[in-house]
Image (cartoon, rainbow, N blue to C red; front, side, top):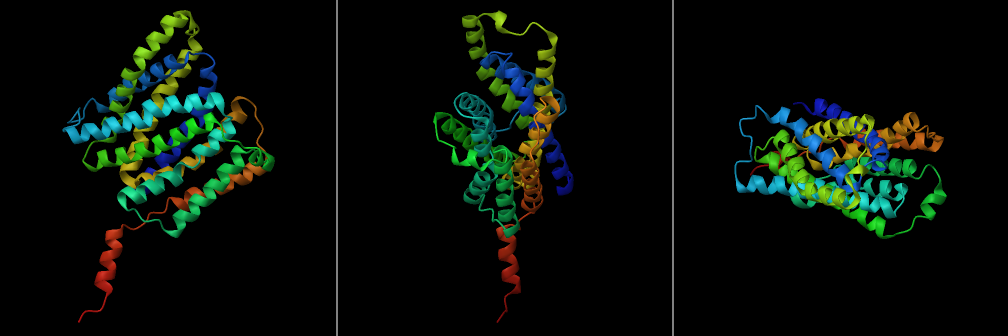
Amino acid sequence: MTHTKIKWILSLVIIMWGSNFVLTKILVEQFPFWSLLFFRNLFATIALIWFVRNSPFIMPRNKQAWGYVLGASVFGVVINNVVFLIGLKYTSPTNASLIMGLTPLVTALISFLVFSVPLNWKQVLGISLGFIGVSLVVLKGAITNLINLSFNIGDFYVAVALLTFSISFIFIKKATDIKVSPEIISFYIFAISSICYFPMSVWELTMEGWSELPTSISPWLLLLYLGVFPLGVGNMLWNRGISVLGPSQSAIFMNGIPLVAAIASLLIVDEPILVLQIVGFFFIGSGVLLGSQASRPAAVIKEEKKTSSPTM
């Protein structure tokens, strides 16, 4: 699969994930905490069965592969989803969005430390422009919001979510490097998380009552959509992007989430978009275009220097 095609696919994933933020916000008020996590991941798991049904290897083939898949599930879904939702209880969406906007920076740093992936000037500039754009969007163009930002326990939980999400990219990359398909990775990521969330959901419904679950069909249809597409299919395509572009380049596309979320908010909950936010969207788009430029591997650069050096 070509890099250009992968970039278009990742853009589609960002559209799904950006709208997912607004739609999930609606469901948070209609479902109990653990039950929302369980059913959303369960629907994703069921959807992914279709994509892995013809896979020659339905299970990771060795302990190393299992370790990478387990690490991606624990860090990228099980822990990440829980701490992020807890963080939103104590901090503002502005703080949370700004912190999560650092994902490309953290992922690029981890990729540099783990894989020795060099950063070219376009990527550095792209990350910087994207972060400026994210800041303008989540701060709603008001500088006073930046001045009034304060650190609290919610910020800490969201920062942990940022770290676990970035770490999961590394496990996914290592798994795909040893020929574990993105479809298999995604399937087991959500299967494992569903198993982890199931007893908590049963405990929650036992304590609070099963009547806490919605009785109308609309919330369940919305939850089914979120589980199948943004979560299941979106995660599978995202893992495919990581396997081709690598963690740091894929993470750059996450700068587009605030843009999509703002447009979705305008269309769904009639939240207006400010002029300065439009400027922020320009920075985000520029950052994605620049930051998605590939770096040449260090080994290639070294080989070029070796072949171009004069011989005696």
